[in-house]
Length: 355
Image (cartoon, rainbow, N blue to C red; front, side, top):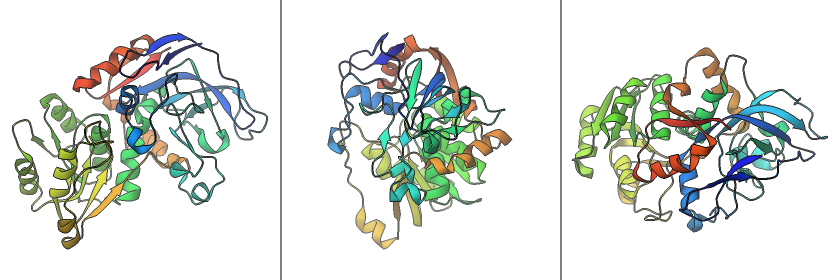
C-alpha cells in the first residue's frame, strides 16, 4: 500500500509502497476514507518532542486523524465487523488500565499514540491498524461524513474535551481563544455551541474572519499589539477578563497572554504544544495565579468512552467540524501541505480524501 513516511526530520515525507497491516487478535484494519492534516504532524515531522520523551522515530508513518471502514478483523474482536464505518482517536487506550476503566483512556497507562510511535503506524496511508479496537474504534452515525470526522481529528476532540470536560464552560461564559489555526477554530466552534461568548485572537485577518464565521462574537487582531495590548483588548471586550482562556498555539507569548487575559478565578486551558524555542516549558505568573485563584489545565485528546457525545452533536448538526475544512487533498500532497504549516500558511483544516 502507499503511505507517507518520515525518513529525515524537516525533509519532505516520502510517499512510497509499504507492507499493508494485518490485524492483531485485538485489532482491526481500516481502509482510509479521510485523514486530517494537523499541526501535531508538523511537530513530529520537525523532530520536536524530545524534551517530553515523545520524539517520533524515523521511519514512522505519520497521520493520526482517520476515518474509514473496517476491512479485516482480529480473532479477539467482539463488536466490529467488516464494512463498519468508524472513527479512530489518536490516543489509543488498552481498555484495561485504571485510567481506562475510570473513563480516562486518553491518558492510558499503557496507551499508544497513533502515528507517533513505531508500535502504532499512522494514517497517512491507504490502510491503518487500530489496536484494542473494541475499546478504541467508534462507530459512525449513518449521516456523518468521513471527511467531517477527520476534521474532528485531535484538534476538535481536544478542544471539546478541554472546554466541556476539563474547564466546564457554561452558557454565558466569556472564552478567549489565542490562535485561530485548526485547534483554535475548533475551540471557537465548541464554545459557541455550548452557549459561551467567544473572543478570538490572531495576527491573520483571514483566520479572524473564519473565526467569526464559526462563532466568535469578537476578534482581536494582534498583529500590531504587544502582550499588554492583547490582554487589554480582551479585558475590555469581556468586561474585566475571560472566564476561560485557551492557548491554541503553544508559544510562550500566547500562553502568558491567555493567563493575563483571565478574570479572577478564571481557567487557562493549554491545547497547543510548544515549539523548539520553548522546549516544553514557559514562564508563567504563579504569584498572580495564586492570589487570583487562576486554574491551569491541560487537555490531551478525548477519552474514547466519551466519543458518542461529540458524534451525537455532529449527527444533530449542533457542531459542524466540516465547516472548518478549507481544502481536500491527496496523499501525495501531504509533504507539501505540512511544509506550508511552517510559516502558518494554511487556514482552517486540510483533509486527505484521496489515497
